[in-house]
Amino acid sequence: VQLQASGGGLVQAGGSLRLSCAASGDTFSNYAMGWFRQAPGKEREFLASVSRSGENTEYADSVKDRFTIPRDNAKSTVYLEMNNLKPEDTALYYCASDRAFTMGYVGTLRGEFDYWGQGTQVTVSS
View 1 (cartoon, helix red, strand yellow):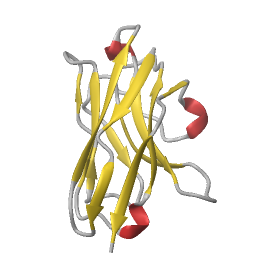
View 2 (cartoon, helix red, strand yellow; view 1 turned 90 degrees about the vertical axis):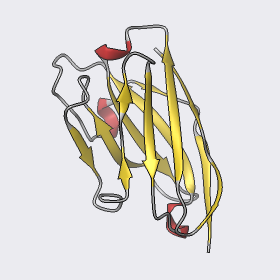
View 3 (cartoon, rainbow, N blue to C red; view 1 turned 120 degrees about the vertical axis):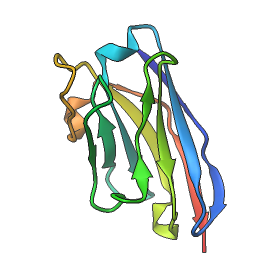
């Protein structure tokens, strides 16, 4: 599966952005999906993930209550809706897919995700 992330940009602190990740090349509903980010000099960190069915989600504590991860299987797209953005949210954001065998499974570990998009930059100014 190929993943194309988009929607990044420059936003002021307290603002919102919606990232999109469009999938192609395979049946989208076969994959659980996740979002990660990597700031300069830091490890890539997990942000959010959603099961194949969309019913189950997981969030990192740092973004819980601010970010959501809806998916639209008909459009083969997963989103990351980000609210109340902070300067520390500045990073390169990646979407990733996990060939999960059950509809309800949702993972959080980087190693569980097989395919990665190219990343989209989010910059939050103070």
